[in-house]
Length: 319
Image (tube, rainbow, N blue to C red; front, top):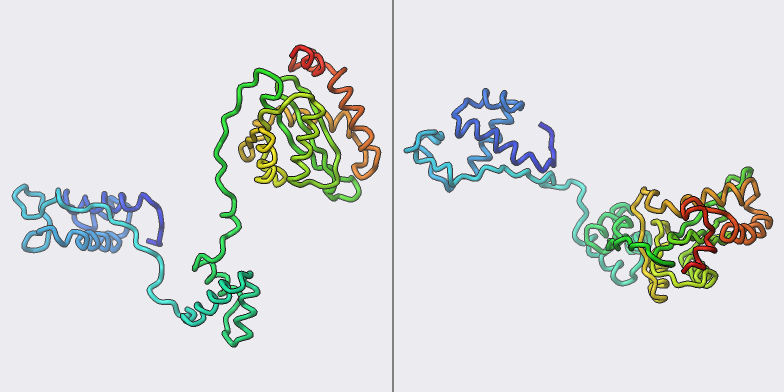
């Protein structure tokens, strides 16, 4: 049987060995019932005996089911753990001296693996770049990129009862039909309670720009944003959260690959693309001039089914 790290294997080995120890079946029969080869069954049985060396066995080292047997089944260990797959020896292992030199250059200069490798080559320590990287990872001197993302404590979705309780924001990536390059972006924001919307056109995206966009949207709306919800894009990272928390605004993120969590902003993104952007070239100044008039129409004249055929402006007056 090939090596496996299945966490249920110790329990499966125990059940197979019980057929031999408790039921008294021959190894061949127990192996057939367990669906394994007889040699595998024999190895498992020998490992079970090693685990229970301190348990007193019968004279012939063979377990019995009889109650008066000297083999105490209640004191036995049944779970047979999976052994490590790490080899006992490494044929191409680097010397301890090379490891110390890699560690020395990393701690002294605090540079990347490429620079550490260059210093080692200059002094005559012949190691490959991949070996330097593996050594630094093994020593814990660098952190893999996938481990840099910290856990975000989930914030419960607030109950929307008034203006600003929950504002959803997102970015639309606009591409040109002939350039095929994603270089222009449309920041959007929607208040869930009143369906009031705001949008800005920018050639780039960043966390600082995202925080400035929310500040301008709050000033344009005239009410405070209590909670802002965004997706997990790079423009809504830790710096974006810190900037909004300084303004007494909480930030929560939608679940990964769950666009339904941002249903209101996703619907507005589709609406503004169909009614405003259309076939307009995103690299032209025409799009920049079309967004403000459309926002005035969307917030003051356009009727919305979600708020009983009213306008966002009328919802603002009610509050």
